Length: 39
Length: 580
Image (cartoon, rainbow over the protein chains, first blue to last red):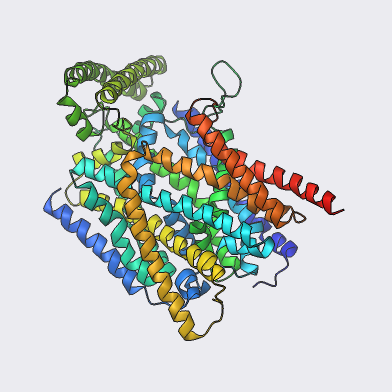
C-alpha cells in the first residue's frame, strides 16, 4: 500500500475530492434556500 | 428518575462495558494495543472519528445553541470537509508511508527529536487537561439536573470506560464507539420525533420550522456583514469564519491531535483511512444540522408549553433563598406575561399562514420578534441577578435546554436512555483521548527517551510494553478524573476547552504545515519558531485576559500557525546565511 506514488494517487482520488467539495456546495445552496424560505 | 429509567441506564452502560471487554482481545504488543494491528475497515475508522469528535457536550449544547441563537452554528463545520481533502492528500499518505504510531513520531523523521518531543508535550498538556474538562462538563449538568453527587458522577463519567479502554486499547475503543453511535443516533432521532409529537394537534414538523423561522432561528446561512455595513470580525459564526476558521481548526484537530490521528492510523491501508475521513466530510455537516434542528423544534414546542426563564432549576432554587429571590420573582412574573403574548402571536401567525394571509403573517412574525426581544432582555436581567447573588454561578443555561425537556416531558424509560446517551457520547471521546494520551506517552516519551525498540520486537518484550501501556492508560484516566475534580474553578467550561485548544493547536498545526509544505526548512529553525510562537500566543492570551488587546481566542489558531511558518522561514534563511 505504501508504494503508491502520490501524483497518481491524487488523480485516482480526485473524483472523491470533487464529490466532497460539491456536496458541501450543495449543502450551502440548500441551507441558503432553507434560510430564505423560513425567514 | 423512575426505576425503569434506572434499569435502562444501568443496562445500557453495563452492556457497553461488557461489549468493550468482549472486543478486547488483541495482539499483546504496541501495534495491537494502540493501532488494532492496522486492520480496521473504513466504516470503523469513520465511526471512530465521529465518536471521538462528538462529546457529550456536542449533544447537550447543540440543541440549546439553536434554541437560543438559531441554526447558524452549523456554519462552523463548513471548513471540515475541505480539511478532510487536505488530510487525504498530504497527511494520510505521509503518516502511513512511515508506518508511524503517533503523528509526532513523523516529526522526528522529518525534523529532529526535540521538535517531536516539544509537539508531543504540547499535545499531552492540552489533551490531558481538556479531557478532564470533558468529564466534568456533562457531569455537572447531570448532577445539577438530577441532584446527583458531582464527585460520583465524575468518577462514573470518567472511570467506567477505563475498564474496557485499559483492557482492549484502540480496538475496544473503536468497537464500543460503533455501538455507542448507533444508540446515540437512535435516541436523538426519537427525541426529535417526540418534540414534534408533543406539538398541539394539527401542527407538524413544517409548522415548527415556520415558527422557528419567524423568530429568526432558521438563520442557517449568515454573511457576517454587520447591520451598519462591513464585515463584523466579532461575529463568531458566519459563512466566512465557518469556511476559513473552521478549515484551520479541523485541519489542526484531525491532522495534529493524536486522539484523531490515532483513529485513522488504525485503518488497513491508505484507502481505508481516506474513505473514513472523506465520509466524515460528507456526513458531519448534515449530522450537525439535524442535531441543531432539535433546538429549533424545541423552540416551537415551548411556544405552546410553559417556557422556563432559566433552564438550570438548581441554580434558580439556590438564588431564590437569597435576598435576590424577590427580584427574580418580579422578573419571572414579567416574563410569563411576555411569553403569554408571544404564544398568542405564534397562534395568530400559524392561523394566518394556514389561511394564506401573507400580510397578517408578516405582521404577526414582526410581533413575535418583538416579544422575543423583550423576553431576551428579561432573561438577561434574570441572569444578572443570579450573577449578583453569586458570582461563581454559571449563568449560561444553553446546555440545560435539551436535557430539561427530556426530564420534564419524555416518557419513562426514554429519560434513562437519553441520560445513557450523554454517558456514551462522553465515553466515546474520553476513551479515544486516553488511548491517544497513552500512545503518545509510551511511543514519544518512554520508548524514545529510553531508546526502546517497539517495532518487530521479541514476543516477551512486546508483552512488557503492552502491560506498561495498560498502566499508562490507567494513569491518564486517574489524572483526567482528578482534573475534573478541580474543573469547577475554571468558569465557563466549553470556553475553557476551546481556549486550551486554541493556545496550542495553532502552533502544532504550524509545525506540521512546515513539515509537509516547506521541505527546505530544517528542525532547529522549526523548533525555535515553535517556541517563540507559543510564547507569543500565551502573551497574547494574557493581554486579552487583562483587556489590553481585543483578540478573541479563536484567532489564536490562525496566529499560532502563521507565526510558526513565517518565523521558521526567517530563521532558516538567517542560519543558512551564517553557514555561508
